[in-house]
Length: 333
Image (cartoon, rainbow, N blue to C red; front, side, top):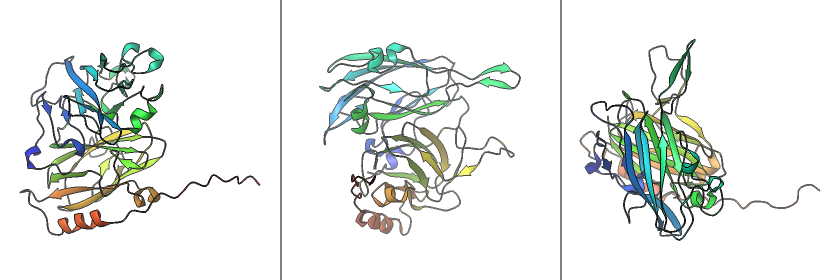
């Protein structure tokens, strides 16, 4: 599914925005055109629901669950209170990476922190700024590209819940960070992207020159890499260099292992122009087997650039090879 012109710019206020859900989840934007005071408490309700195909998802309203779930966004120093409504017949939870919480909001059965079927429970996540402790040393804050996922469906680690789609992205920004025009969540989960395989993987869309933010998340048991054609970013917290002499490497491919996450911003088509550009896992057997999607950069006026539709058609008609069968024979002689 393609995100169309109606999603041309994300809200810059603290409101809920609902882009085309299959293309990366809805967005809870904590960004603002004018800085807000620190320590804001934001409250939302998420609904965990069954989806077709024996899958599950999180959504911002009943009947709106998606894979991945909504992209949640706050400022460093804010608190996010999530009322999770379990509209399934399974035990499940929500567990965050990168932020602070007490044991009651851990989301793990170890701490008796989960939702029984039909139960509603509140999880509280806190963020904090970095602290200067002197001597040019700092305690890190929580700003970064993080994620959340189930930790209770199927077993005490939520393995089945993650496998079936209970995950999403979390951004903690610093005030002053650049705000994107469009945001996309990309989850590599086993041999799938957002629980889909090419040619049914998400096609993300932007206009040339728009600021686009990718949130990349790894799940499952397999190591992956994330590669975006024709675009590159700095390997920093935001994907941007902080000065003319910033020595951070500039990359277009980065490891995306299970449980890891990163994000970055690019200007769509910068230096290369509009077109249908691939994103994919660069483990060759993984891309061969369908871990590939498209980033469609339209012309600045929203029209389709020459050759883009033909490229999309070729992608949809391309045959991806089946996964080889594992050899379970005894090789010890």
